[in-house]
Image 1 (tube, rainbow, N blue to C red):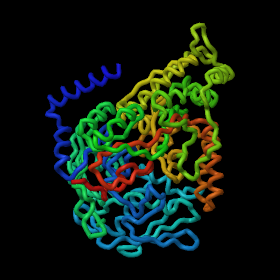
Image 2 (cartoon, rainbow, N blue to C red; image 1 turned 90 degrees about the vertical axis):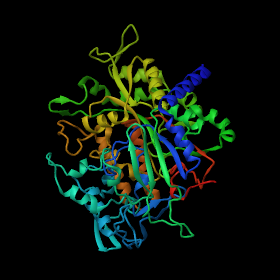
Image 3 (spheres, one colour; image 1 turned 45 degrees about the vertical axis):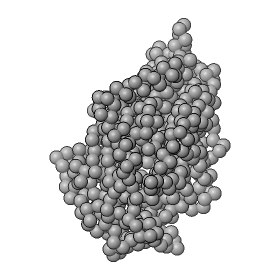
Image 4 (cartoon, helix red, strand yellow; image 1 turned 90 degrees about the horizontal axis):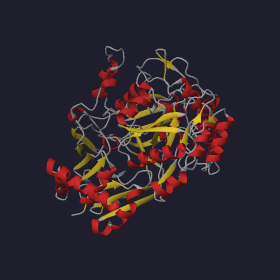
Length: 582
């Protein structure tokens, strides 16, 4: 059967290539002659505006840099646009000194004015929704830092109280004031800053001004993005040569991981995120295919199932059917779901043994991960017991009903094209049917799903993933009740109609308060204790039901030199230093 599937997919690819002149193969043949790499992403980008992006991957790792950067090998903060910084003795001020001669991709100078603009008018602007702003909030008042210009090369950040993630929070992308300032100051017909509609995916690439190693050269919808070297990038190698070395980076838009594997095996792609389903196949082909599979250990981030806990109404209409909302907001219902999901079967069948059960929102590599956090091992009998305890009952067909006789049935969505998440959804559908619950599993386009989660807020349950890092405070916009990634109980985004009747649970507020306390605490051991409590609460109340933590695996062509792989940064975190072997 596996051979037949591969044969079918191969024939489909041959037919597709014959009909389209096989653009990917053409690019691959050019890649062997030119100084470029070809990669794949699952879907079209949603925006070219770094402030408004909620997706990963996105283009901004190639196009923008901040004052500092985190080295993914060491976890240490290192200079980027800023060549140095000084922290005051009371830990309430940081003065950054920029590198001399910084320029934007249009040749204009990059100065302290751009830094002050990026923070004061973008990240700290309440009229502009940003995932980053919550990570900059300080203390119970949610105060934001004060950012002031000292001179053209120096900027001072000031905070009202000690803030442990202070330095790490200053690595946000710096954007060009001379291009974007007017869009922030001008309001559209809807009363919102025009910046909210600036740099959408329909923007001509030459209008997008950047400071990173690459600039966007071309975007062809549903086909590819092409990045070309930024001639004004600041970084040079030890011999004084301009970086990056690679002339171009091409992202092919391939909406199926199966197709991506076929294209990688045929030589059309230079790298591939290796899913467990294909690990054994690709491992056998390493030498013949002239590539290496890098293993960074457990991946950062999390994959989880979540229910919509928002009890609110918009324009008189409940965001969630009140009947289902009562189920979702019952903590024992959520625990029953957790016990009803066979994560070991996921590890064995979907991840081919290349993963482990995940029990925490904090990555296992982080020094703040709590190893003693509660685990929900598969136990369908306990799941049924919890449901019966809450007034649910079973009919003669074994179907689960609530106390009013309503069949327990809900829709579970994930992003189409992600083979692993689609497999997870299918198994969850099977697992929960064993405890009498009907799950209508519906993979949908990623952009449609993001719109439901962020804007309409009309959804029931979903499977999604979040990237992670060593510093837990980077996820505060997920845990703060007003955070714009607090998806399980989301407030309206800026510019959207208000919601009436939304409630914040005591445990929900407690987690937020603990994140504030952890950020205020400068002693690492005490911070660890606080974050241990947040992980305990997350597992007790289950706003997110964590699934499996896979290994971080990426296949890269051997012709690409300079790879320093890590689970945090992947294969291309140092893309400006990578070279093609002649």
